[in-house]
Image 1 (cartoon, chains in turn orange, purple):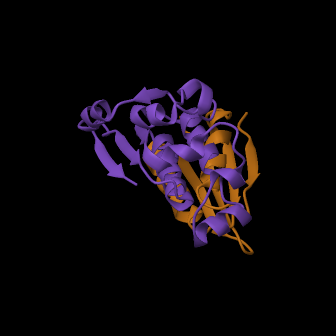
Image 2: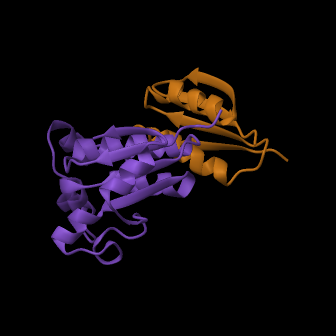
Length: 76
Length: 133
């Protein structure tokens, strides 16, 4: 059954949040979702761009109180 | 369409430039692009085995910020690129000779794939894109 995991990468600078996401994806199964919380402004565009390049899906991107939440679904 | 490998020639020992090389190399590697990094001249000195971050890194304004903020460590970024992508690192054989260093004795553990000469690196780099930092 697919799971949703949260990564709190707030306070980490580029490319820390992306690298944390990739490490988590490596240990996930297809269909799992990972919600990355990042205060690094670039993550809101970097993470979707990376997903588009390597073939994972972005479920949603939203701005919260001082940070971004990017939910990624492992697709391969 | 096959992806062209990225070749990075890292020559500078400045923290800011090593940081940029680590960011470019690791992000490209985890984006399914093969990366090879040739570390030469003063850039090899920070990779001496056993150095603390304070001993390893020297630089200017952004170096000071890197050392006090939660910025990923450059050596760790290179390591993550190797672990999560296709990233190879080569130490310049001329610099190793001048320093009387061996890769497996004097450089940071588990980071370098071996020594390499400039001519071999340049020949390999003809198959991809080369940037120099």
